[in-house]
Length: 231
Image (cartoon, rainbow, N blue to C red; front, side, top):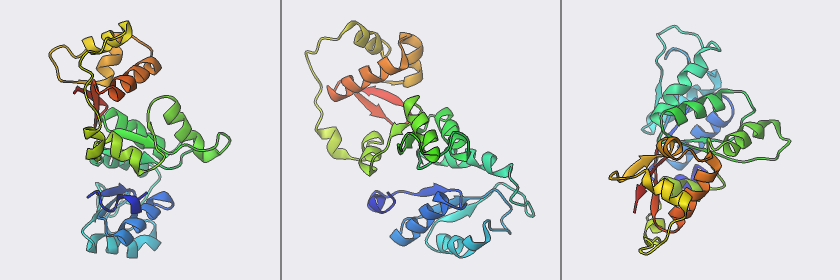
């Protein structure tokens, strides 16, 4: 995924921890993409220790290491969920690669949703423990389905071609439920998904289907932060 983002002028933010964090930072360094690691310890103690060289490479390449912890703070367990709010706050989009039903990835996803950030998740096999969290996020409409970088570009409006392919349906007739959604806009050009859910009182799954149809028909445009804009 990081390799495919090479030409998108992005900054990769993660936690410098074992696993996917380390993979993301290493891939970013390899591809020449700036990357930032948010730690759950003081600056004097890079954790995990094997990532000291990686951290230096990240800084040298124009990225960095951040922490809100005082000098001397150890990488205690409770520091890591707390630092996830910084990762979610810095990011325009949060991508969950793998997650069980409990863990830091789901905490970060929940925080990102509360900050009106876009969340993406890679689906996995139903019986895989470390896919259950991702599947849950997608199933409950807390994350966009992520199959490739194309999904990310489309939702985040990085792909200008997707914009030009759409044309507004000038004489389109709306169904009763579509009219409820469109009435949410009124004089406003942009409305959040939460406002649409509250005002229409329709089931979330029904609203998602309506919004997708209106988007395909060129009536609405999905914007970052789970907001929609009239075309």
